[in-house]
Length: 151
Image 1: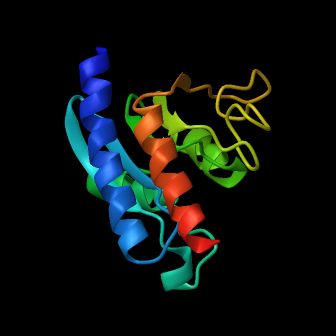
Image 2: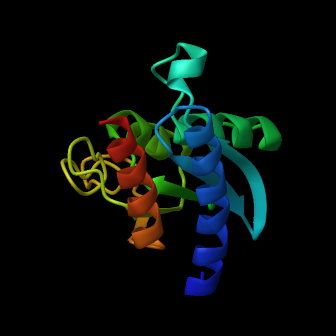
């Protein structure tokens, strides 16, 4: 996809992240896109749902699977404002996501670039194409402002 399309869909993920922030959750948003169509969008809500797996990526993948009536999302792209954790990276591989686009790195828990490289590991049977840094400044600022306000 051209950079402008990546930015367009990342802006939708940022909208989702702001919804998470408004709910008191870590501001992470995710959008699943296939052939230019948004299949699903979600934001972090593990605190509100009392569910450690309620990360934006997991919820968006679940909703996209429901939409497609298939847990395999081959050829789809996942846009997420922050680098996925190890759990989410595993779900990306299992869903057969074609392209993962993320904005900000997660230097503490990143499962795609910062700590681990699961989503495109040669050890696994599926590898997503990784695009990082799309609207990274905006994604990072949202996270930094959230945590600064918490301290």
